[in-house]
Image 1 (cartoon, rainbow, N blue to C red):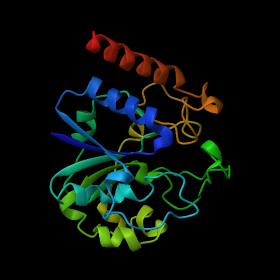
Image 2: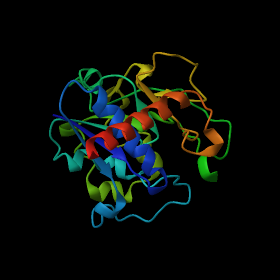
Image 3: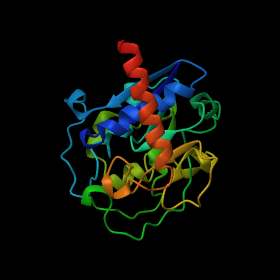
Length: 227
């Protein structure tokens, strides 16, 4: 079983649903998908919302290993994404030498705001934490107590690891940043980091046609199943 945790924000509920469908539609192995909904994490995630926090899952992502019982491997991804390849291919990249594996972007955003006017923060290792393969047994530092008190930079810059040698690199096609990464047609995972096509302002962004096609396929499947 491939365990996938997806960041959830009610403003992007449709994004979560389409992403989940895109994963399951292409998976060659059983996949379990769990949304990281704050309403389901009461008593676990207790920290106050930070003024620079742009989504509900800015910090809940770091509870993935705890929720997995610190066993096996788990995948985390933001909800503003679309998977266009078999998630099992990503899972096969798990390497026990590492505690966590990410696409190591060199990403320095120029804008100060993104979707819905949310703040655009700039920091080292920006977007590394948007897709993570967690080797859960090696992430025991990520207790609820630590996640609730650590700063955003401590968490997103992986200061909870002994050193950066424990961070493995994933192929960049597994976190293609729309609007930043060089355009390509072979992206395995598309990340609408500025804003997805489900927002009017980004309706015509790169890979928007693929997102709408995925949404329509999901709705057709739902309709067919209901008949």
